[in-house]
Length: 258
Image 1 (cartoon, rainbow, N blue to C red):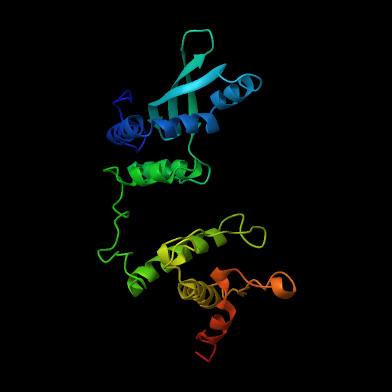
Image 2 (spheres, rainbow, N blue to C red):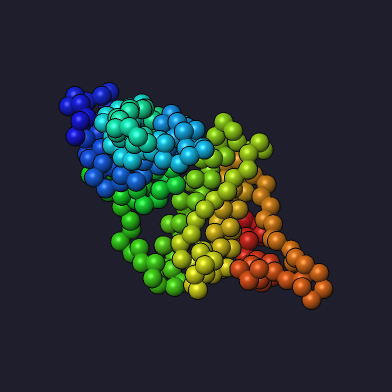
């Protein structure tokens, strides 16, 4: 690796080297796409190829340096009719990533960059880097092939969703100015799978609603269910939410005193 041997701030040189080696060895396509999305080279490529493709092509990218501010990329550029050239560019960590002050936050920033670039496979690979905190381990009973999922597994998802939602609500851009979306698709919440359970979705919503309503802020929570669409014989609901309202009304929402 070309990463400097000296540690930069609280980030160890070894962590920077390990992360760079992993990206360079296994995620070349991700680095090319990241260069296109977050560096001036991407804009150059789009402009040069507007009328004729192949005038300027980013063919290979490697991480040449890494520090608390971001990554330095070294790209090989193919230009039609000319010899290949090498260009460099800096890519900063995502604005919503934690400040990089040690190995743990370095790993989190790398994962945030992979997620922002639309590369969940790279993010999953970065989780396995042998540095930073140990908070990435899965529970011992994490068996998603059992349906319904064990209660402990379901509540692990519920707790993670609530923690993310709670953090978002106290952010500087908090309510009522922002609209939030939560993507959580274990098998029982994935509508594309035959083990999808509307009951698990409602259980998740109940956990979120009750925690928000009875927590420190005692927020007012409203749950909305999509109404039937269409007219006449063409009226109906998507299969994924058919019967959800009836089930929700029959659930225990701890509406009684206490």
